[in-house]
Image (tube, rainbow over all chains, first blue to last red; front, side, top):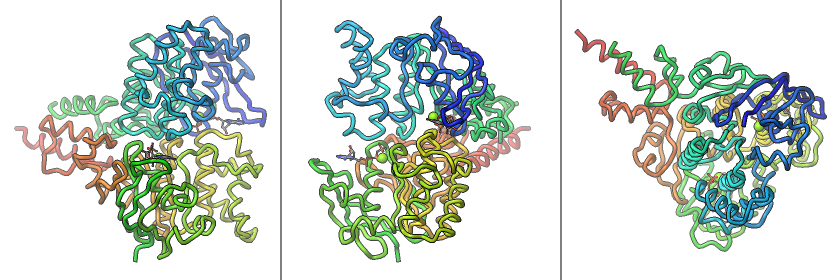
Length: 269
Length: 290
Ligand SMILES: Nc1ncnc2c1ncn2[C@@H]1O[C@H](COP(=O)(O)OP(=O)(O)OP(=O)(O)O)[C@@H](O)[C@H]1O
Ligand SMILES: Nc1ncnc2c1ncn2[C@@H]1O[C@H](COP(=O)(O)OP(=O)(O)OP(=O)(O)O)[C@@H](O)[C@H]1O
Ligand SMILES: [Mg+2]
Ligand SMILES: [Mg+2]
């Protein structure tokens, strides 16, 4: 199911023009990261994909659905969105109920519901906390619950807004595994992140936003070495990429392995 | 004499049987910038609350040992006095807006206003802090209509403006853009140079390595390692226990296993260290060639 954003502009009621003429297409099954400075419009953009916000100008298509013509509840069949602030999203008494809430609303059968909830608990490794009250969990685990509750909806498109904030190395690894698994399952994954190293290691395509516009859109290698443009929107290239640039490697590198491979070849040359 | 002193601190949250902090002994000098690292649940926030007096005054439970700032203990003070000396920026930047103010400027000025700071001084201090935290252009905006990172900057500004003697920051850059994060570390570094004592819980190893004086690694409520950033952040045991490490360290370890990086060379934690390490390897190899 393709996503098509056409010449999208959005103005908040207070007058802030948060998006200015954004156009992009995301194909079914793509893994895309959105990066860019605070206030660039990343959250505002993705809130248009599930109808939480409606364009001031332009339009957004999710498959053949124009978001202006479908309710948020209807769009939830196609797009799952994990909020930047999980507390905007969580409201039931136990983790398991929270995770079951979305898929139940989508009218799935009892058996399917159960399978989806177990799958989401397993992917996020929340099994041991299934009976806990989300509000008794730390903010980092609450974020995992929010993620699980969207995974369980089994939508073709999933959006994660800053999933790595506050997560330790193990949880970031778990997120990487979840994203890889979703890719295997043919899902479209859109992730907003300030963790550029995580971005470099897990996403094929990177969209850079600044001032309500798309500044760059391309493969991680095409985008993440462009130090000057990234700096305009307060982003440093990934650690590994910076190391490669400083050492004058002729190729943009995104992971430690890649760095060493290129470094060794160029040393030998 | 240390400004902050924790002696034999052990803490149990209400109705819990395992301590969230255990046998913590810690002395912090005036103007020191301490980074607290550790996996989720290690006790970073609990340590922050303990320093900031929220334990035992807000979170009940059982606190053993003593927590002192300037020779006075939290147990013998009340929270409203304590917060004037020890400022805390909470981990969750959302829900930190006071709810009383219409603009970002007023929100940041709130604490000073409450303390009756003269108007001119207040305006000057607020403007300075808005500039430092990169939100001067948002001064007239409503604090409710901000992006995640902008809200976090307001939360940070609201505490910085109070100029507490001890500043406790619980993951203050978690929602911030990369260059903003680096700048905030730089601002905190400067505050420490001017004499503010800083304790910051963080996951961002690259900037901890570059800006902090000392690193405390927490593991299951205990101090597991402590020392200079370079020394702590490259310790084998950290990676084994699931602590994060910088990509520079990861890459050098990988290079070590490929026989590229010599074992005698210390592992890098910053970009500069990594650049000089790999440049030396390259020079060594080109010299070795006929
Ligand atoms: N509810 C709102 N009302 C008015 N303006 C808003 C609202 N939410 C965000 N804005 C403004 O719109 C712009 C874009 O905000 P958005 O939340 O999309 O940024 P972002 O790229 O997600 O930033 P961050 O990295 O900080 O989360 C910012 O200038 C912000 O202040
Ligand atoms: N209010 C509470 N009641 C009971 N236990 C708590 C409470 N808050 C935290 N804990 C427990 O105390 C321990 C330390 O938690 P703390 O929040 O200090 O860890 P942290 O290092 O800050 O983790 P994170 O990286 O997730 O923020 C954990 O086992 C946690 O479950
Ligand atoms: Mg956002
Ligand atoms: Mg914490």
